[in-house]
Picture (cartoon, rainbow, N blue to C red):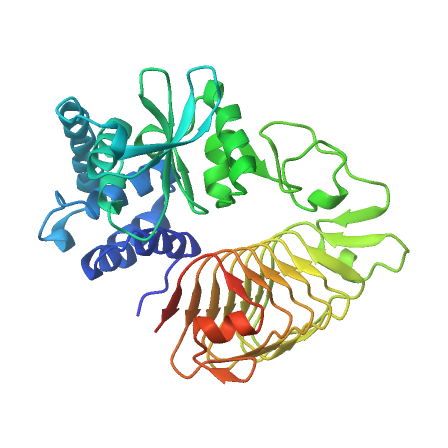
Length: 378
């Protein structure tokens, strides 16, 4: 079986969120994965292609379609959507105003089928296929009722063709996110001109939700912390400042690693099989945390991205309270104080969470665990 690149896995998650069929997932694992090994297309382009592939206009023999062909067909699909938009009449019953900015702009929730189709056509995306699903879709509209941003609750923020939001509309979207308490993926915040900042709680530069700063902005930190980009130096730090490691770190198979005084890893942390980890001071991982070996992280409180526990691995993290992304459990996990999962919870056959095999949503609620996404049993 071919190894999937981390970026391919992210695009597969995007496709799964749109309920893509097996043909699309297979295309991502093969054709797209091979393309990503050679060069890096923009996120907007790839997601736009996936939008096209999950539409009713996608090729039947998808396995015969190259990436370049898919891009060309996706843009042709976009042009056709634009032409069809003029033929759709949207009534007042098709939308619901949820936030009026009193200057002609407003946020509406899409209700009727006509609203979904018109939005998808004008914004050149596949939101029309979301009609009837158990999700909430919002749109930023101007005084002429034209859309400028499409949003899926706690998931996506898209401009036209899955691209960036024009700067003059960003403030409206940010106001809505605050009003609704919505959180979306980091790649979606990039559409608003924001980029992820590591260690936001110690950042002196104004940042949004302690996580994002405007692109190109100079970043300054508190003198209470010391930030390393070299793991060896960070793990051997003996001073009294709060020790932070900026970047990603991968613990190799059978490797023994001592984190020393490191309290936070800004990027992702991957623990390969049969590795030994001592990280009694580690409190947070900003990116994804991948567990492929037994691990005890007694003071870990938060994971900013996905948390993945592979088969034959066990994780004990008695103080972990939140996972910002998706939670994948393929083995045993003891997370008694976990309260929030920002994405979906994927539970593999016979996996155990807090002593319960294949727990139901009601069982999780009794434990105080709330998932913003759905629970998937594999």
